[in-house]
Every structure is written in structure tokens, then in C-alpha cells.
Image 1 (tube, rainbow, N blue to C red):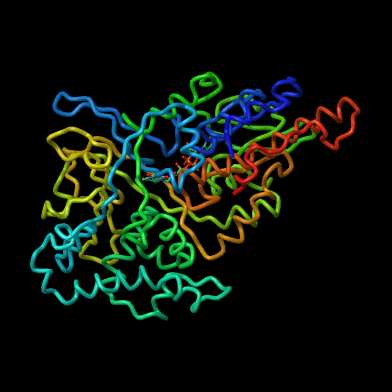
Image 2 (cartoon, rainbow, N blue to C red; image 1 turned 30 degrees about the vertical axis):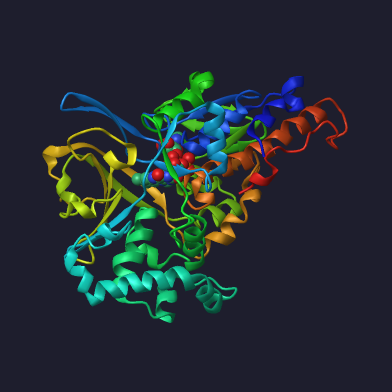
Length: 462
Ligand SMILES: Cc1cc2nc3c(=O)[nH]c(=O)nc-3n(C[C@H](O)[C@H](O)[C@H](O)COP(=O)(O)OP(=O)(O)OC[C@H]3O[C@@H](n4cnc5c(N)ncnc54)[C@H](O)[C@@H]3O)c2cc1C
């Protein structure tokens, strides 16, 4: 699999039929699609927001006279689990640096604090050396790492069990479930612990296994983009940034004989040969409205989203009180179990930011962050995963060139950057075939595609 092969396509060399393509959304999915389609087609990226990148959102600000660039959305990736994204970064020659991905829990109800990285962090509170509840948590953690996969096979067979059902069937301690398992998954998928209980357990265990979270030895090296994630976006869009329209909210699409009629807030409607929907699935359904086909409605409605309020600040009081427990990701379980749990990313450690202050990004703050220490507030929406998701994702090919509209986005996979690239790549591969066909038909030629080369990203379908 090699991205650069795409540029050598016969169509590109021969300069055949160009399509007028609208790409709705400038997150990683939309930008990847635009990056590959731009050389061959007349693309227009329509982005409702005021910045390019969607969840790639780096805040640039000054604190104590020093300039900082801090990521508030996408932060980390690793080469093992993000092969296509890593390839893209290599092709663009983007500078990256290693980071550490430790995880801490602070439970307000029990006053427990620990960091799951080493002995000093696990026993940040020395009294836990003799705390049977905490020792049971650690024991269950080991047991889960060793046995989860086997238990999963015993438990669910062919059917999809939720996390909640799994823990009803297998006895793990409440401490392990509530002070390790749920916070960890909730931090990874930026969603409340209650939503994690409804996740398919197979999805979570397979994700943990693939990301080395079930063993200490096989953990991948996580990385960040040097100077902030916006740096890769700048390089990616450099040749075609003039094709991006910001503050361009698409309000409706209509399939017409000439193509797809796109309405954007405050502009005249425009006709495109093809539209790539790189916004979230619920946003796409809203744009389609009554125009959605039964297939679009059936598939796209299977991905619910969770709203995340994100606060960028320098209030270190939201980190564990015991500094030995400070980690890259810090999970806070509030007194009231009905309150949303909070995650704080300690950005100095994650991005290697040099500041005497602790610069933090907190998700779902409920007023703990002092308002005079807030730098910025942003709202994101992140997909939550249900047991019907696998079946819906398997139908992605049906929504590529679905009557002139194709769909991509991180929601087609586990919700991360690699999934955005992978789903966009699947769309680009298919579109690559289309114009050849159209050009052949216009010229009255055979459409058996003898001039079509093999697909370079053939293994990259979603
Ligand atoms: C707080 C947070 C931290 C995260 N950290 C990581 C991380 O470290 N690593 C990782 O791999 N993943 C991370 N993720 C997951 C992240 O969501 C995905 O990696 C990925 O960035 C999503 O890309 P996307 O292109 O699918 O969607 P988005 O980036 O959300 O892009 C969709 C775009 O569509 C635009 N849009 C919506 N409606 C319209 C409309 N009507 N008209 C025009 N444009 C529209 C939106 O404005 C947006 O720009 C994080 C997510 C969150 C919320």
C-alpha cells in the first residue's frame, strides 16, 4: 500500500475527465479526500466552521509572555495503529515527536488517586499498599488483561454483548469496573461512563488488544505533531487551500439529472457532479432531510453522537492532588455518580510544552475550572458505539457513489484519525474508477476499464 502510487494513475497522466466535486467538512476525512482528488478534479471544500481541520484544532495563545500552540481536539497517534495516517505524515514530511500516554484516576467519593504507569504512580498514595479494595482492582486488571479475550468467546459467541452485560456475566470487582475500566474507555472515546456500558464489549476488547492496552510489553509508541496538529493540516492543504471555503454551512442537497444541487447558507445553489459528505453521519442526515434514501437513513442513523464541552485552561487544581499521580490523561470521578466524569489532558507532558504552569484540556468540566484561568472553550461531538454499529459499518461500500454522494468520516471505524483517512481513501479509490467510466461512455468506448490500473489502496477499504 503506497499513497504515492495514486499520483501515477493513468488518468492523471493522460488528463481525462475532470469532475466538479464538493467535499462537505474539512476534518481529517474531508481533507484526505480533497488531498487525493485535487490533482484530478475541480474540488471545493465547504466547511461550516471558521477553521480548517474539524477536530484538528490547535489553540495559539500567549501565557506569561510565552507563545504556545496547544491541541484541543486531535492530539496523539501511533505508527502501528495509524499506518495510513503515518504514511500521509511521512509523505508530507511532517515533524513529529514521541509522547507518553499514562492514565490516572481521582475518585472524589473514595479519595482514591493513582497513575497506571509504574509502581510510584500506582501507589502514589502509599496507604494503598495495604488497601484491599485497591489491591483487588490491580488483581482484576491483570486478570482482565489475561482472560478478557477468552471470556469474550465464551460469553458472546456470535452475538454482540454490551460492556454492561459482560460485567454481569463475569465477576470483576466494582473497584475495577468503576475506577479503572469505565474511566479508561470513557477517556478514550470521550464519552460518559454510562454510554460505555452500552458499547459492544468485543469492540472495546479488540481495540485494547490492537492498541497494546492488554499488555505492558506490546504498547505502541504514541506520537504528537511537533508544534501542534495544525502543522500537518497546513502542509496538507498548501497546494489547494484556495479551494476551501470557510463559514460555508451546507444546508441541503438535492439529486437532480445534472448532478447534485448543493445549497450553502447565504450563497446561490451550485451543481456538482459528485458530493463527498465528510461531516458526521447525523449532520449528513440533517442536510439530506427528506432527500435521504432509505439506505442512507438506515445506515447513517446507526451512529449516535455525544456532545463534549472542552475547556483549555491553566488551573492545575483539576489534576490529582498528589503530583505522583499526575498523568497525560487524568480522569476525575465526581461525588455524584450522575454527573459526567471529566478527563483532563496534561498538555505539558503530552506535547512537551515548556511552561511553569500546568496547561490542561478538560472535557466535560462542571465548574471545577476557575473561570479566570480559562483560555478557550470549544464544543465537539464524538460518535458513541452501539452493538448495531458493526453491521452498519460493513455497509460503507453501499454509501460510496450512492446516487452521486459518497460518505467518509472517523465514524466508519473506531472514531479516530486513522478511520478518517481509511474511509476517505475508500471513497477516493472508488471515485477514481468513476470518471474513467464516464469519459469512456462519453467517447462511446467500451467500459471494461482496460486502461484502469490496479487500485493502490486496495487494502484500505473501511
Ligand atoms: C476532544 C477530542 C480529542 C480527540 N483526540 C484524538 C486523538 O488524540 N487521536 C485520534 O486519533 N482521534 C482523536 N479524536 C477523535 C477525532 O474525532 C477523530 O480523530 C477525527 O479527527 C474526526 O475526523 P472527521 O473528519 O471524521 O470529523 P471532524 O473532524 O469532526 O470534521 C467534520 C467537519 O464537518 C464540518 N461540518 C459539519 N456540518 C457541516 C455542514 N453542514 N456544512 C459544512 N461543513 C460541516 C464540521 O465543522 C467539521 O469541520 C478526538 C476527539 C475529540 C472530541
